Length: 417
Image 1: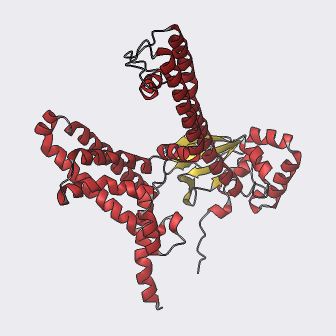
Image 2: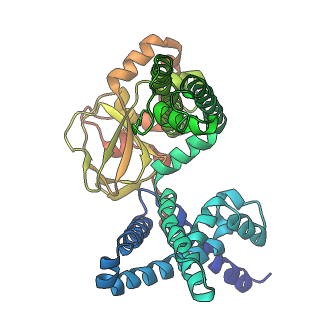
Image 3: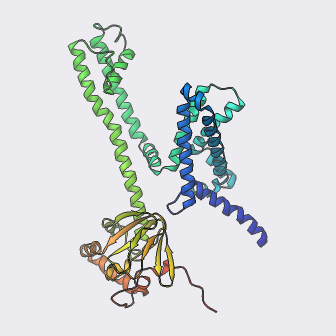
């Protein structure tokens, strides 16, 4: 293939990749992706709110034109989003090994794509076919689930429900069994005293459900001593049984958040040359001493003249180092300050957050504790430090450019003529 033909093929591929990043990434450092995600989330909330308010006849009569305008804008935006997601599906990590057509088919069959389709389907159904408006109203409210695409927290909840589906199903079966046995016991105890309310086990199950759920509407209450004892047992069992799925979800959610933080922290530490040769147990040990910090864009991370006592891992976003030769940017996965961690110098350059950032910080004292507890690892760290060219003798005041920044993080300089 000629160079011109290759360039023609690469251009749309690059554009498609950019569209995928804007719609699916929304990274900390990508301003455009954040704006697009924020606008889509706002549009979802606005359209769902319009559907809710429009259900009131007075609101529909007074603000009908406004509600229709919101609907048109939402359908247009969501339709364009859906089409672009299908087009950029081959660049999705899940479908990277597939051919473009297969990737798009796989995407259209995914749960998130089905939710996207349901979000716009009511409008087109109302235009093309005569359908029950109540059904269309319900489908329009399904747009609410689009928020899961843009919220990591909601995605974590769905991941937890998926991971714990067997445990939740088992607790649901046990809960149904408790309802069934309590309803049967109440049917036997109260049938003669209240033949209408407890005429059968299915009829008694209504009482059992509202009692175990601790709702207690009061429309059906026990009259006999045996019935009251059964009711008391049902109430206590209700607290236990309803707390079981809540505990499962809460524990699994906490583990999911911890797992994500662990993976991010592990990857950041493992990328640092200072710890690259350490085994898994040593990395796990040093992770105990790391602390996280989030800073907005423009915040000063390191100030010129301050004693250097920490090293920093960039978990997300970018920082700008104000060097004498000009500003230098370090991004996600990079780090700075590891030399100052071992020899406390004073900073001679400022480091600012170029975008909102998340940092993992390791203080010199924590490194000292870590090496005292693990002297062999401490000797290994010193050996790695001695082998690095950046550890050449410097003046006591130090130099951030020479003493702290990993040379591999700096962009290569073009050689002069």
